[in-house]
Length: 384
Image (cartoon, rainbow, N blue to C red):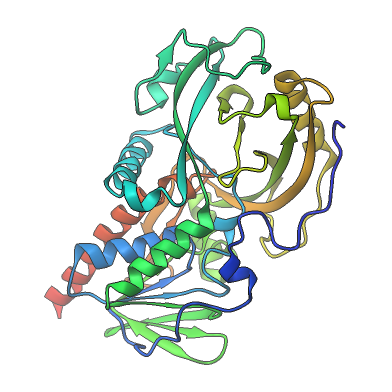
């Protein structure tokens, strides 16, 4: 039945068994003085920690997460990994991220699986200039019974669906197996100070950790983390916006391992990683949204979804089986933010995805962040 909605589940789709059980898997850190502190245990924070440990075998890293790892912004997206880019930096991060996954194909198979993607290309869009791997023109990619919008070209390419929380668990294991990395859950960081010796963070329970460098991987919580990050984010044009993730049930006769992307309409429809339905995410043009505020479904979102899915699948052939409402970060340049945050100190770097790119670009963001942090540590050591 078109537009039918059911309540969101208590545990959003993609929640792992370990985190549903309520027990953390990661011991309390004994080392309060690592070389690097990463604040935020989502996919970008954990990937950055893993990249730091891999690049420098003499460094130690501690990740501080306010909840269970992977239970922040990382757990809510669909999530589709498509090689789409807008800028030269975007392309660099796409290529680095896909290379990272390909080099670890055996490990990543547990949380990342391939899905052929059909792109609906409007006449005015030069899609091949914005997709990294080659596309195939002239091939019909959508499954039988699915329909393309009028006036678009169909081109076929590669994409992957991801289980973000399972990926976070794998990254956390990689960090801790190194012997130089620690992951600490249920540890909100509430303050950060810096002196000549390094940076110190204070946690909500009163504990402190100090390090030579701090990476803030706070996602949409960064702009309002404190007054200094609020001013810094405003100067950068970094803002938050609400995103609605719909779980879509499809008639059995139309189900297929296939995804579609329509950049001109900002629509991306794909199977869930674990099966059992499809995902469709839609942005909602309300700015400055608090990630921790309660979020209700908006009728305009259902209307937009209905217009697209009625066209693609047919009226009465799909239904909304659940939804997730979350918050993402955006900038004018469409690029992730990997930059020193001198508003907080000389030893602080911000790493965050924007425009829904955090999951698919995390390895590239992590690699660039790790290089930035290690260069800063080497410079500070030279000065000392």
